[in-house]
Structures are given as structure tokens and as C-alpha cells.
Length: 455
Image (cartoon, rainbow, N blue to C red):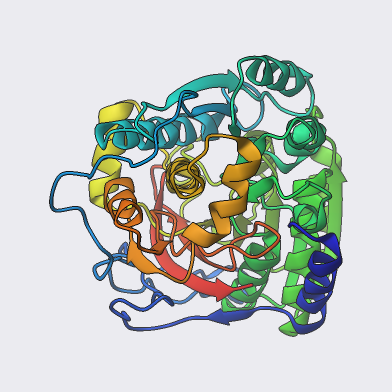
């Protein structure tokens, strides 16, 4: 991240060596390598196309039971600032990823609340300014970024879309401000010339692609067709799904692209179905609302459908009951725990999805902790401490607990709601979970298992 000559060889190693994905069966209390766990009930077996996915795994997700928790008052900061930390958010409230906005914004607001409940950063409360990112069909993100930079933010949390982030990353980092995405997964950002100012809590799609490709093969699919959004997110994920599936012995028999803004998908659907794949991977955003009925209307069973983080959403108000029953989807990050969901619902009682809420919450905590470690609210100073607070020290999993350790002169290793956040020099998580979810009769989804992988 700070040195592209180091980042580029790392990317080459990923391509050459792949990723070790550990599907673990039991908890490792206190370990920095959490276990694979899951929740949910029922079977994901499918009669169609010979697909029969593994049964849901038992458990309640990875915990941080060994991490430090705050049991007393937070000591005052020994350094105070005359420039309080101000954070901006660039998250979608309109456009094709608008369904991700509410949980991400709730995660940011919960993080801000808890930081301020613990006394703020460097003796001053933290403020947040929210702006819409829109999608790549509009110029909303550029306008919002200009407004946020004009208000003197030190960091901007967002965008959710990799395509949107590509339109503003140079504007943000060129201003000496941190861009911290909770949901960007394009591998392109690993080697971006970002002056050490781009960070993310979502893992590269090298990992999600590997997990999804392997999982479809594990379910018995020998052939796969893909319908793919033609942007940085879609084509990057497509490449990694294909590589993993074919490495597992399968064959991709159809790959049909569409562009953001398209509203007709019959041609892509017909071409994919003509190849008669065992399984169909939908790498889209909310275009799935139009694509799924076209596919199921032609007799394809929902158990043959595999979705991704861009479209694994609540469709209870969009489709007739049973439309998606048995379909599965992947979302980076560990399953949201019940206590975390309760805190998020206190922030936004209307929440139905929790995708990337943990990653957004962790982004706030990491920025705040790095500012404390740097004793500065300047973007470049904060960025220089982000990797340090994510690794190597005493484990802690809340702002109050972590900042207490920092103010006691200790090194910290923040583990968050999204999993064990440990950054590479490129600002990427080096280890992460991918959650696998299954749709129920009411077209909502439930977690069935998690896979933990290292990058």
C-alpha cells in the first residue's frame, strides 16, 4: 500500500499460489485464526442437476472471547487535539446498491456512538457527515466527495461499489484523505497508486471467488453458467469464480455480460440456459430482481442459483413465495451476532439486512484507534498507524477496550465484528470469512456455514 514495488509482487504471488482456505470444524478460543462456524437449519439438498450442497454447519459464528473488554472507565487521553476527528461516509442511498446503504450507515453510526460514549478521540468527540454515493450511472459520488472534502474530513468511509470507488479514489487520496471502504472487493485496489491512503475491511474477491467456485463444485455442479455485471466488481469476481471452479474440475460453459443501466436481460438468460449448465452464478447488483424471474420462469430450479454479495438480499417483497427457496449466496464477513444486531437495530429499527455493517463499524473503530495511536487527526498520520493497530499486540474488540490499552502505553491488535482484521501493506485484510447463506420459502436468507481464508 505504501510501496507499490512491494504490492505488485504480492499480487503476483496470489495469482501463482492461490489462497489457502481453511474450512475448520471446531472453535479455536483466543486464536488469531478463528474457526469455521455456521448457523441455520434445514438441508440445502437439491434434486435438480445433481446438486446437493453440504448440510448447514453447527455453531454461532466466530467469537472474540479472549480479547480484552473494557471493565472500567476509559483513561483520559494524554494528548488532546484542537482539530476534532471528522469522518465522512460515501455510501449508497440511491442506485443499484441502495439496499446496502442502511446496514453500512447503521454500522458507521454505531461506531461513532461508541467512540463518543468512550470519550471520543484525543479528548474531543468525533463527528460524521453522510453523503450518497449513488452508482456508476450517475456523478453523485464525485459531487458528494467534493462536498465531504470541502468540510475537512480526515477519512471517507465508502464507497460500497468498486466501480464507484474507482471514480473517486484519486480525488480522495490525492487530497491526503483516507478512503476506507467497507465493501470494495475488486482485486484492482491491491496495487492502486493510492499514496498509502486506501484501506478496506472487505477481502478481495480473490477470496470470495475461490470460496464460491469451490462451493459450487462441492455441491456437485460440473458445469456453470454466469450472468455478470460488466464493471470492476463483476468481471473481477467472474474471473476468480471461474478459476476456482475450473481448478476444482468443473467447466464454465457460458459467460454473459450486461452493463449498468441495462433493463433487458432476456438475451443473456437465453444464451446461458442454452448451454444447459448444472448451476448458474448471478454476479449482479439489484438487476437480480429482473433476472431471477426470467430464469425460474423457464423451469430452472432455485437450488441451481448461486448469488453473491451484490445481490444476496431480502426479496420477500419482490418475489412470490418459494421463488428463491434453496438458492444460495456468499457475502464476505462473518455472520452478524445477535448482540451486534440488537445494537444496530437500536440505531436503525427498520434494518432487514446486515451486509457489511460489521465492516463499516470496524472502519470507524480502526480510524479512531489509529488517530489515537498517531496522536493526530490528519489523514496521512492516521493511515500510517492503521496496520499497526490491526496486528501484533494485545487483542481487543471494542473502541473502549482498545483505546484504554493504547493510553496505557500498550500495543493493540483490534479484532472486529467483521472478523480478525489484519492488514497487509497494501491495506487489504490478510484473513477473512466468507459467509454462505441459503434462501428460505419467504425469499429471505439465513446463514448456513462460514469459510475462513487467508490471502
